Image (cartoon, rainbow, N blue to C red; front, side, top):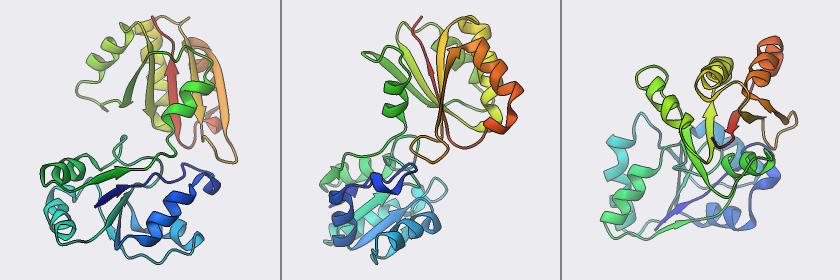
Length: 222
């Protein structure tokens, strides 16, 4: 049995009672960063053993963990924050479990995607989730594609590329396209900034102290 267990993206109170129970009951927890997950488990008084499962080793260890589950072990997969598999490792393990007829259960829980979309005030009946854009190769191709969509776009961006991304989007989508930047969702310093792409670009360029933490960018439909 494989459980996909979402963990808080900031506020530790966002963990569900079911997630806590599952993390206590499984035989093993696979974590993107065991140091990060250990802090959460210690906070919840959970002593389940931890093993690393991340982008750099998932190809090498997936078969091993599948064999553990075939032998009867119950395993939970967590990422550093949010839902495993959403811009985080997890897909390869889920696919391998499905192919091996191992039951997979995904618990509902935290993700930066939906809160950012809903709080943006932009249309959310239809949307495209892009995740992280390529850093270099293929970046412009993806941006041009996103600029043509007739529904809301949500993407994740790192702080040191935020202003550049807003500038690129303003050039392709038009400087007046409404957008929203959500920073540090659910954390103490959460901030929501709404405006045109050009206004947001100018604001963050002039306020570098605000370009910190986890960023979610929501762009209105064409």
